[in-house]
Image 1 (cartoon, rainbow, N blue to C red):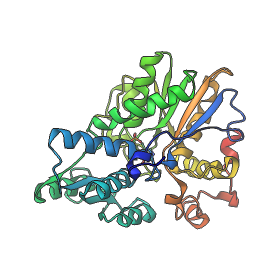
Image 2: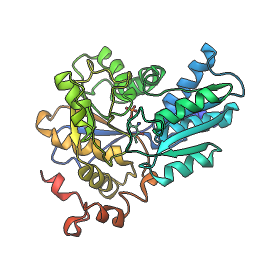
Image 3: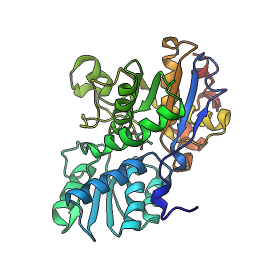
Length: 337
Ligand code: PMP
């Protein structure tokens, strides 16, 4: 039996019990490991759904150019689908993103334009503005706009949510997810809450992002916005894919805790995951007193550790940011909190 092309291998990712990292948590903690997708991240799922829906609605036409502002993982999914389906890709990204992510996009023939991080979204130099301008200037082009395109959360409603429900045989009580566009938590979470309204959705946020404050106060507080290091999660605006009514709570995790915990996942569980997996586990540990022994927690591990070789898997990178105080190479301080 074979697949007709690589896109057919997207999804059906493994759910793996964590044994050492979460030993202080009495509940069962399961990681949904999205690294086995062809682009090594969960974003393959929504990339092919956004393309399929755009083809259906006629927004994306044969031979067209896909233009998107992406931190890398969505770009990978789009770039792989573009190879198979015959589209061109131009991506704008920020200088905060790993070089590995940018080079991976280029490996699939995509053009990548790196833009400054520390500018307002409305600034003409921002990666949002540059991609919007390119879309206007490029004939036969389409901008998926993963933040506001609801095909993003629909992919997780149709695929990720049902997989988690089946893999846990309906026993899941909590879904813990790093929130960026909001597609994963809102789509998978909607499906799961329809199955069992008691399931709790915990969104993991970063310091420097607006989500938690907005959920708690309804205020889009500009003071919450400042540069941060953690990749893939947190935003300085409110994407349409974040369903704040559905999400039960947000928890913020520091850059340092997220970075050190990412390393711990490899060292304690043998799972080579990306930065937002570390943030999600660190956030879950911060919330451990809200869990009971009979709870079954699913944590999404969005992407693969190879994309972060020059970052948290590199001691010099950690040292330069003061994350290796006293040359402590582990996240013991977080684990014992
Ligand atoms: N982690 C990583 C590494 C990501 O690339 C993303 C996507 N921005 C997320 C978490 C958050 O996923 P979502 O966009 O579905 O909220």
